[in-house]
Amino acid sequence: MKYLLLLIMAISSQVYAQEGAFRCNLDLRARILVFQFSKDFIAYDTHKGSFWKYWQASDKKPGVEFVGAVYNSGGHGPQPISHGEIIVESKTQDVWSLGAKEAQYVSYSPVRKTLTCKILRSDASSIKIIESPEFKQGRFHRNFLISGLQKGEKINLNKFEVSQNGSITLEVK
Image 1: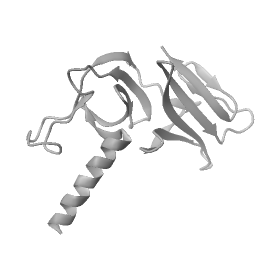
Image 2 (image 1 turned 120 degrees about the horizontal axis):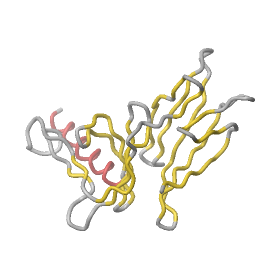
Image 3 (image 1 turned 180 degrees about the vertical axis):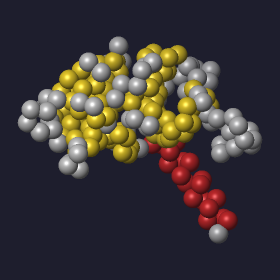
């Protein structure tokens, strides 16, 4: 049994490294989802499914240094640390909302590099928002696929407003 567990841990760590997506505590923040695109890193706070920051790793250090009891013999206490130049960092937690109802984090896909959130209505139906970060011509884009919006509804992400289902792209500057 012990060897099976070690084999599973070894396989899963290789899978995460290849997929470039993982969840961890990062920079003293819990439940962070990180997508890696070569030297570019995008982090989300999964408490609300909100964008946290985008940074680029330097040539001298990896974008995320995995330290702590889970990753090495660093003992209890240390946690992963991000390294590199922060390009964009959100100081507020901008969350999709429908009036007073806020979106909640649901899941992520490490293969597709997507984050899924839902806004639940009082009748148990929902609006689904799937975000996929992307880099086009050296620029960071946040792509959203929105479904479940009903006629006359509008959802907001800070000052950005959407009133129809479909795909939307925001360029992050």
